[in-house]
Image 1 (cartoon, rainbow, N blue to C red):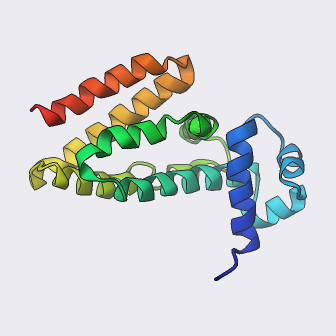
Image 2: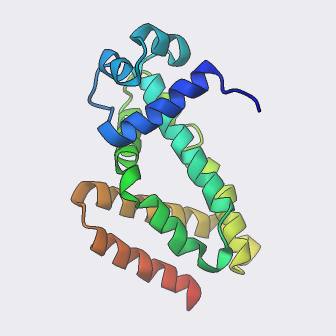
Image 3: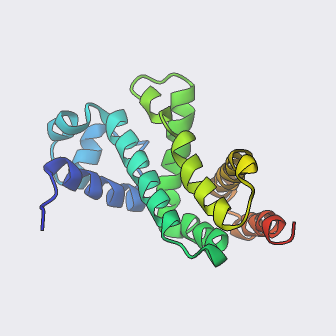
Length: 180
């Protein structure tokens, strides 16, 4: 078994810590203390607080894409939505939208967050759409639509906390693919 690098260990710890305690509003020193390391070690591995938070958000997204690929197509939409809206991910989802806004606003150290934030999802979503029988020519548009709907509803959820309303809206969206 290959042991994880120090950076990977810190990243895993940061993902877990932020999921339970948040992170965007904390200083780098406070994050380091929560992780049981020094701020210098975080700077060494991630460059800055923004670099750490970007790495966390990108890794959570990568794990979500990997989980999408492993789902049974028959119930993939609902199962994936259930996973995305799990309470244990709420702080990471909030972090995603905080970083998205900061990157769009030009906050130093966050621009790289936008790299692949859309494009990295299109292939996995198009692969799922292929299993639903969506014609190849239509998949890119449907993939962007699905990503936009999911992200919009996730933003609604982290903003309002109204799980029933966002679940009902996603159910209507998913039904469009089951009953075209």
